[in-house]
Structure formats: C-alpha cells, structure tokens
Image (cartoon, rainbow, N blue to C red):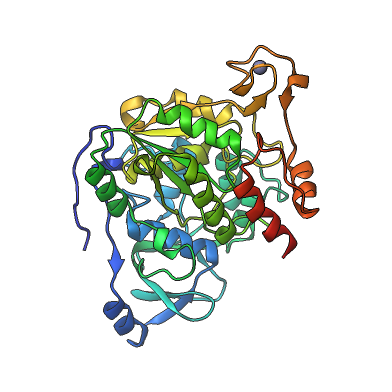
Length: 385
Ligand SMILES: [Zn+2]
C-alpha cells in the first residue's frame, strides 16, 4: 500500500527517507463505509492527525503509534529504530469499546474518514506523556488538557485515510507533501524555507519571511488549519489575510498552502515536529520564532530554538532559521529585531495581542507599520461579524 515516492536522504528529502502515501480514494472509502466494519468515532484532532499520516506529512509514520513507539518517543524523542520523532501520535480507544482486525474510522457526523488495521491496544501513560513531551502536567495547558482527557487506552496500527477532496475555503490550499514538492520542482527551487503560523500575518512575520527569502529560492507560507484553541482567528479569515499579504511578495517566489494538523502548543518538541513536517513537504529551511509553538509562560522564549540547534543536522535534515521578534523601529525607520536595532523600546512600535484585538473590535486600523491595511480590514470585518 505504501508507495515509495522518494528515497532521497539529502537536504530536502523526506524524513526517514521515504514519503508515505496512505490515501484512500473515494470509491474505496464508499466500499468500506458500507462494508459492515466495526466503527470507531475519532475526535477532530485525531481526524487531523489521521489526514497528516495518510498524506505523508508525518512520514515515516504509517499509522497511530503503539506502546513501544510511545515509550521511545517520550523518553528518547526517537522511534524505536532511532529515527528522530518528538511527539507521540495516538488514537484514543474509549472505555467499553472493543476493536479487532479492521476498523472504520468515522468523524462525529458518521462520515468515514479512514480505516485502521488494529495491531495493538495499550494503556497510554498520559501523565508521563504530558510531563516528558509538554514539560508539565498542568491541565490548564491546552495541549496537556487534550492528552489528559484522552481515553486511558490507545489503539495502534497502520491507517489509510481520505485525504481528498477536502471541502471548505481551505480545501484547495490543503496540498499534500507530494503536491508541494511537485510545485517546488516546477519552479526549479533548490532551497525552500517553510513558515509555520496559526495567526494572521502582521508586518513582523512578513519581515521574518522576507529575511529568509533573501537567502532561499522560495517560501512555503504554511499555516496550520487544524483544531486550535479558543480565541485563535478562524481558518477561513486567516487564509484570506494570508492572500492579502501575498500582494507584498513576488508571486513566483511564494507558495501558500494549508497544513491540516492539530496544534498541540508543546513548545520545543512541537517546533521539531513542525520542522519535520515541512521537511516532508520539501522545505530545506524552516523559520523558528520566539516561543515557537508555545502558550502562556510554559516555555522560555528560546527553548525551541535551542532544542532544534542541539539536534544533529543530518538527522534533522532541515535547517532551522532562528529569529527573534520583529518590530517597526522609528529610530531605524525600518523593520528590525533586537539583533539589528540599537534603539530603546520607546522607539519601537509594539502592540500586545490584547491591544490589537481592542483596536480591531472597535473597527480601528492598527498602524500600517504593524499590520497591512488590507489584512487589518479583513480582521476588523471578522471581529465585528
Ligand atoms: Zn532601531
């Protein structure tokens, strides 16, 4: 079932050397849906992981992980064969549900989203997972809460899943790793930098992307659109806002695609996962910002950058580009970071998330040096709808 699309281990090759493809086509899915298989209903986050597994975004994983993989990832940040892998990908098995053989995976509306070949059911050490992967077992952490609330047992095994077509305003942008690789090849890009985001793009992010684009052939603007936490801006609004920002880049040097995956807010370990997923999509470089994939005050501002820098380059296989926060500086008369600007904070245009939300809710444009007006208009319309 697994197609070996590439065995390239050089920079830009998929993680583990092989790009996984475990897609189900519509006909097969229809047959399985009516084939009398036992069903397991998956959560929205599990469905997003399932899609990432089947599309090859999580290569070399071919399914939900079992007990030995879970323990190995927690303790060593590696698969049992030694391959770097930072976060376990598990499927919860609710209490009282028995599974055996082949199981149809369905979303909450009952639609078939995939099929699992059951290899193993195991007790999932959720507290250990929280401590070792997230660095905390605090249930106030949104990623930890999802782990602690998961069933006590998980079911493991290879999967196949429906990847296309994906409906909605994001659907046409949800490219598989094979598809982004094809686009990069068509454009003749040897080096591609990936940018992960779950927020609208302001001037600060635009600046980081442009800094990276000065030294690479192309940019993959790759927002995550899976389940996030309450308060994050809706995916369709963000996609429109990214489209507006593209007007400030040469069209031939940027690809905008959406990554369907759950956000875990696991900070340093998730930064490694984000880098590997972009490697699978064909990126050679990856932007790692301040407090990357963090939430609240759980991680130090440069913990994620330090973890990525500590990993052997040939195992990571994608070059982390480490950035500090950017801002408009009146003294410099330019975008800058603490690395490049000598002026005091009073010279720097800084708005907190709370200040920005208050402006947008009141229908007022933030300064153009902070947010492009085209983007701000979309955010104002969304905030007031
Ligand atoms: Zn300055």
